[in-house]
Image: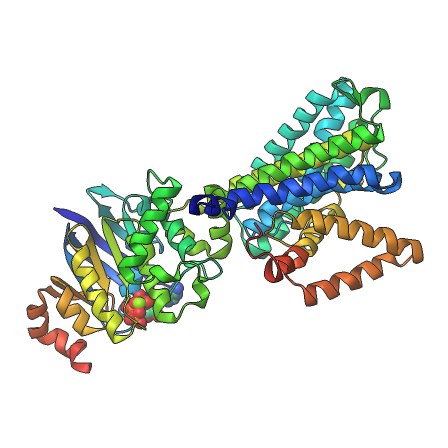
Length: 237
Length: 323
Ligand SMILES: Nc1ncnc2c1ncn2[C@@H]1O[C@H](COP(=O)(O)OP(=O)(O)OP(=O)(O)O)[C@@H](O)[C@H]1O
Ligand SMILES: [Mg+2]
């Protein structure tokens, strides 16, 4: 079943065509990687999916519903979670409260349940011992993990992650890969990622964006073998 | 002691009750100790501290800087004053009229001013308050404009108590203050209050967690404006006068200063700031006619050396859990 789809989705900034008429479909339960060179329009594209960035043209449907005109907070309530490319946490609040703010929005958020959900999410990313630390005092990598926990705790149907492994240590990247695989049993994942190891080992399908348009789409092996992708992106790395 | 008992004693609700209860108790005891001049001052301060607490909900907890709160204070003041003066209403319905008037005005102003953010929000709230001030002057036939009007002693009797009696006045001010303090203490521990703090800290992140940021801000304006109006109505009732001065820019700046001084985003900061500034002006004006200069210098020193305000310093140095 198609969970999310776009038709002709576009964004232009004063003459610059950041995303150009993208038709895209994501199946429920899938792990999809979105790759492409810097400035290809990846962040802009997912920003339009979750409503953070208003689109210039086109349509977004989620779970069969047209959500193009829906404000961001309502889309999130439908079951999307989003982590920012540039880490965005509540720096002056502690780790527990950061995740609790994400958890309190769910139905049945009694204080006990919120606390339990928060601890579960923090354990999944390995931050369970840092609950009282101010988010701003965490290392960069830990802030990224915190943001992932803020997404996890929402038990989203669609989890959009914008370069989550940027700034993580090798060992943390390893556990991130495992986390993604475990999640995929009940969450659809759209992952923007520059780390090719992570992409090749986690994604079932890959979409390549270049100059705001879809250049190729397919399984990891198909993408690896694609000449256009090679010259536009992989070749340079 | 059981571990459960321990966690209760260090739990946020228990600490909050203890802290705020102690303050109310202290204020009650002070009436017996202080000479009449100072207890009279303190009654005034408690009413004005409610104004500061209202301002703090929006500025300290939600992160929105308004320069037009005098409009909400005046809405409460005239809501009560005009119904008592012209309609011969007694204090209880007068108070209700004051609250409703502040609530309606803040709901309308909130829905308009929140279309802007940052500096534009400051300017728009300032302009609305200025328009409110001019309206009061324009309707001078009813409001008596600058001159204002006095509420007669005979009319200021609430449930048989003469509100002009110092003890009754003090008790009424303390009751209003305690009620509002309790309300704010509960509010900031609630889910709603925590969401406001999240919006203050990182609005974009709060939105992308699924919170309706605009709606929360609007509700914060209403809570803030209604508390401010409660203060304005009580001020007119307890001190017997309503006038256009209370709708001037100066009265929009006061709560900002009180809250900055006392500590934005703390429940007890508004009271501390109001006391501090009241006596700063009171004492310095005994020595020099340039008292505003002295007050200004002390304010500058404080913002330089304690930018989080007095309660902010207490939170940093002594009591990290200060709500
Ligand atoms: N707010 C904006 N105003 C103007 N141009 C923008 C804005 N945001 C993005 N762009 C431009 O749109 C294009 C796509 O940007 P986007 O951030 O979506 O790329 P990306 O694929 O996420 O790149 P990266 O891998 O570096 O994160 C870039 O050329 C960028 O400069
Ligand atoms: Mg990007």
